[in-house]
Length: 396
Image (cartoon, rainbow, N blue to C red; front, side, top):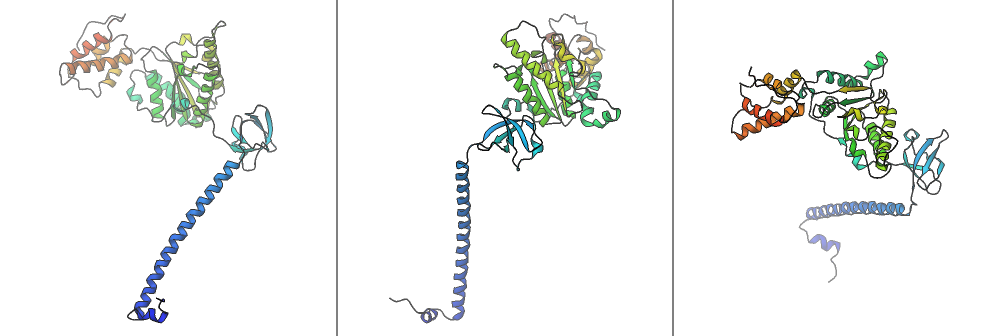
């Protein structure tokens, strides 16, 4: 059957108004269809462009990795190529020369050997994991009996970071590094954590024994990367605990393992010498055996301020007890002065253990509050076998 003519098509509608509305609806449908096809076309064009870029990248010759040795004045640089020799190469116009400095990792064009890209520095994931993301929640109020040590560490670490203009006015350089020494459990690590809490600096903690590695040169490389991380994260505080693990006295006769430890310490000494005293990186080290450290590590210019953290005296022990019983439910008959007198020779860690043990005694006996008897039993248990005899129990 032949298609109806235009006149016959119009007759199918009641009037011209219905026909006009029909045509308007048809036009809207065509516009929607056109818009959908246009969007699909744009997506296909983007996909084609993406595939072309992928093909171009696959066809691009590989780049050569190199490290900058020296930047010359005439848009050239001396680089150490991964293929072996040192090369004098051109610097591409797209590269900012101010970002090029010795040991910068760059990519070279395979044909012209020009520097075409600045690559991110290679960073050991183990070193990157040393950064403490969240600031420690230890403040100076949580440390008892170390008023003088807190004053010194605030002057030598906090002030240079928070108010460097004070040192510029006087015209002196603040100490580069601080060495904390004393018996175990006396608050050396707590002091470092409190400094990191009070300042807004990045806190990087490492135990010195972790820098000693199996293969030759690995320990020295980790020390370099540790201090490079500190510079990038500045202002920062590097806390090296148990530094005697790598900073022991050097001797002429040694095994291969000891020589590797000495290489690691030599790199540490080199890094300490290269620091600007007024810079935004501060070094804090801690040790229990300062007598084992190499004299080269203790000379001025490396660890300028050496702070002793001794066993607390009676007043210090009283302050430490006050710190630890703040959140504890204790009975009114407890005399902290008596407890301080009973714990001669105890460290801060011992006092914390005594408070914890007293709490456990109260739980064991189903007490609602910790009594003096709980503390006395805890002292007998924690300090049992110590050389210093405990004085007789005296209630005040």
